[in-house]
Length: 100
Image (cartoon, rainbow, N blue to C red; front, side):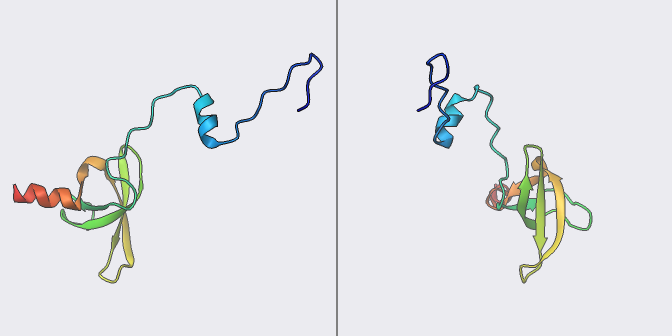
């Protein structure tokens, strides 16, 4: 290893992502998404031409909104709808609500 003029060694670069992550200042971890990407969801309210109960797949999401792909019966995308996370339910969750 090369030494600088004062005889000290230069700082070593992290060799792995985990090692570099451990050197970063601690910051709050991003909250887990309510409806993550690729989750199948059901609309709890109507949105545009889509009635409440419409199902689709989350293709993008952040902590407040989700972009949902609505597909036809052949699996082709017919529309993309951006909805607040709280206006969506996981398909399994909405079935459980209806049963109770």
